[in-house]
Length: 206
Image (cartoon, rainbow, N blue to C red):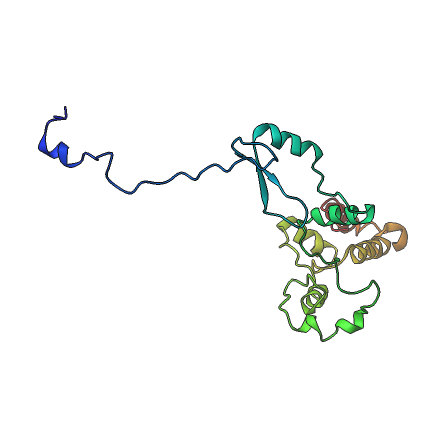
């Protein structure tokens, strides 16, 4: 417990008379004619006098506010213009865009901004877009059964669906017994081709 009679405690005591005194600003008198009360309430002086205030007592500031009209003396057009400007905090604004619609032609952009920016993904129709269009989509590696099915149709594995269907029809037409005078020696080969085609079809290749 601190000893209040200690010499060390006396050193940190602060006298009420020590240090500069801060003067409180005097409250102005009410500016209402004939009023002698303190004017502790501010009221704006009006348009074109922003930041300037009258000082009234409570009763007179209420009376002043009842009749206060910032737009007094302004026409309807001026009031509407002020309200539109107030929507942006009375800051200057510009219309979106700098060119009228249809004034910029695609050929005007050739060699312009497209050649001055790096656009590897072609987001703005630059060289990256042309490279993306020219590049063929990558296909995933074939599974063993898919590779065997392509081989059964005498294909490499990169053919399109149209090419796969055309090869299948050609092989069936050539190996079918009806096309070989009833010879059934190619039935096993034909069955293998049919199974391979249906497997590739179910896998989404054609």
